[in-house]
Image (cartoon, rainbow, N blue to C red; front, side, top):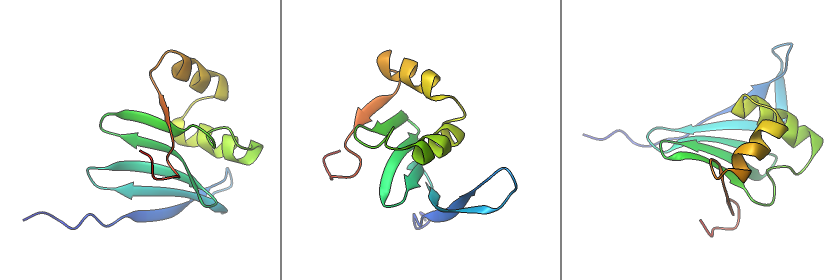
Length: 97
């Protein structure tokens, strides 16, 4: 019997271990792990790779800071992977996936 695919949602934490408002990690078994900043999905880690939202992946300094933490790399490293086609850019917030 398959388990229900319920999301697990938690706030990200800062260097002091305090929860950060409006920055979320959403995990859904067998689907992937999502990084959401405010109301926008920024990045998805899935079994087939990493996808970034084409509009919001580099929206603001705060989004960038927590995106870097989520991906475990710098913006420069992320840009190199986008340019090389390792990371895909898609519309993750408009329903056109």
